[in-house]
Image (tube, rainbow over all chains, first blue to last red; front, side):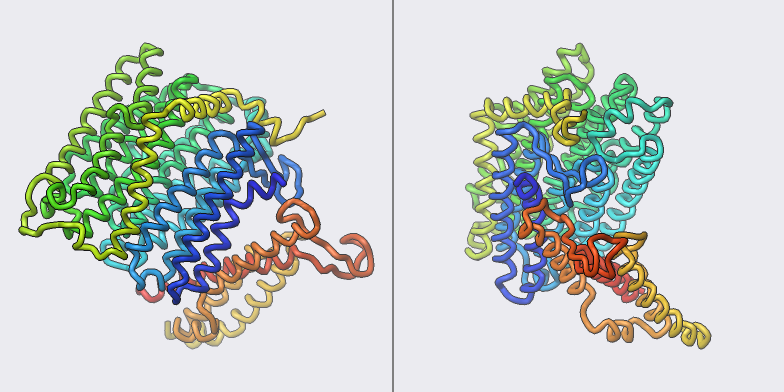
Length: 500
Length: 140
């Protein structure tokens, strides 16, 4: 029974991809994709309920016992990421009904999109290191396809940079896996915990740990490995960039959180100390980079980088409160950032461009869209009572508790600069009149395009508000998730079974 | 590429690669081999053929679109994994029916879901590698 719960969130998107491909020439393709996304969400929620009941659930694929077979495992952190992936997938599937033109559907937009969701979900559920690598590859191939779909010169340029740098990352990651396997003889993450602790040459373990940090660091786009992100995220369709912005980098952060709490905890003073300063620089460089941009999506892309810093900081500080903040931040950020990219897509449809110098007047002509921008934007900057406030509050409080005043200051200062960028978008896209004298009213996009694009925006904004006003259950959830990360004994015993 | 030697050699090479890729596919599971490596070798065969005779002819030789091949393969692999539900086993558990014995050593041959899964993987790998390779050939 458990094996079904764990497999379904991965299998449903794959099956949907197959059917959506077969129906890609017909209008039914997009509805198949939408139905698949709804089914994935149902399956993910079912898994969430099982995790709430049992704490950690695991299943051995093909009936091969751990650590020999591939284990799928969901703890609190894993399952919340699966659910949020399904939510983002559903939101963008609805959005795609309005945005994605038939030409791209025929090229296979929906199958690629579903494969990407399957890859992301698989990465969150796997308990095996090599299997994680396979999911990374599934993600990379499908995201490359989505990135270059349409085939404009700009997209191909972005696609090459994206793939080249991500291949370097997977190569480093794969080498790390090989070395780790050579040292311990196992790749099951739960089994590795003990095996790595028993390795004689702990210096070598630290070296391998740093390889993993670099590999995941490229994926997560931390300083100084983030260059592929702002080079590529502003080129694909808006639905695609929202999924990328919401989910892809978070897989890197998740993998880092998993490995650096479960396996590489032998030399926390060294590895996590590096990560603290990497996080601080990531936050700073990202937000300063954003201040220099004047394109809607480029500003948002740089903000992804700066926000990644907060999440890795939560991991790096390595206290229960900090990890709790990191988990909370992860979930909040996916919702908010995906939503901002979706808003930028509507703004592009109405005002005609994403370059802030060439648009304007959205506040006067489309006040509802303006309101829908303010919610995620202020949440991103950390305004109370939106979700971002609680996320930042937890991280800053954790760093103050450790008397790490510099980090606390950086975190707050970056929040300030985030407000600067958001007000820049607000001022240029929404307040100032349109430079070409266009009046960007909502009816510039026909109903069948605009309505599906606005539904997910409203839905995600509502989630931001709900988390902001009723944070207790979410904080409690994050607290248990952080507790499981810091003390993975339940995770290990569930995966390996009780050993004689 | 206009080399008579290569074009002539490619005929033999391509057929050998194909036989080898099928051999690898069938040999899998109990011995090193399987759908993944088989699919890779099969893709190499097509790539050699398209280098020798041009991508247009290689596409005709494949008959179907490589993307479609990959997606159908994905469906086959998924279905083969799901078969275990009817036997009450965890997902992707191989289902075996031994002919003339009761294990690998004693039986003549077996009917099983593992080979179906491997065929699915073979098609996925073959299709996705070829769709990439053909895309690059068009670029240049």
